[in-house]
Length: 346
Image (tube, rainbow, N blue to C red; front, side):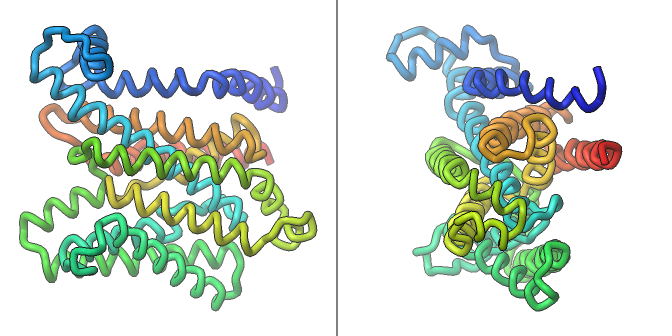
């Protein structure tokens, strides 16, 4: 088989995999519930589900039941929602700015969301009326506005946007560090710094009720605008000539990216490389058309972050590694491989 034919084969086989996407996601969720420092058999998991969903009345160890229902299951569901949301955010940003390096982490959106969440947590910004998610959304919006204004002042190209994003990330990360150093005690500082690296240990069912709807809404909106994102791949002028309402689509999609990123950061902290690596990998597998790329990236992002969460619990016995560390350890070499492969195909 030639190299040119290989992607086509991958795309056809992956089309079948996408058709079976719900089953793949369910298997990943079951793995997230079963695998851990204390392995739990599938029969116990099934019994817990039967008791909770259908009141089966099966006799179980209350500790095992609590681990499954109150800890591992919500943690895994939040990981799936966050992975899907971050991957979709990367797809949208890369389409809008026509730059392969665009993602929420690199463009400063995640840093702004983190700064907003920390400001609400430590300083009580909003007087109790503004929750952590609200603070993260405001921070993410402000960060993207600063980055966009800086990029426009520098010439407005995609390369300038990435450079402005790096500067914005450093600015808001520095602001976050300043807030922690100035206002947090030692215990707060340690907890916040661990959270900023990505931490799913504290998520519970209310977090699932926030992450899942936001990821689903973001997915549906991205799928609705899939053809518009295809048009943006040829440039803003070309998209306008094809009848795309450029300004309205940009506002809606940037708003969706900001909402998804802010929500996920407020729940689990800043997690890098998901929005950068997953869309690239899925483009190689299913091609550049967003009608395929959007569902493929959402599914792959969800499965990838569930796997990263499992690894974060298993790498060091008795400790939980920040999930952002795991995604960076996997994502950086993965992105390097993608870059090398892309060069060989040119």
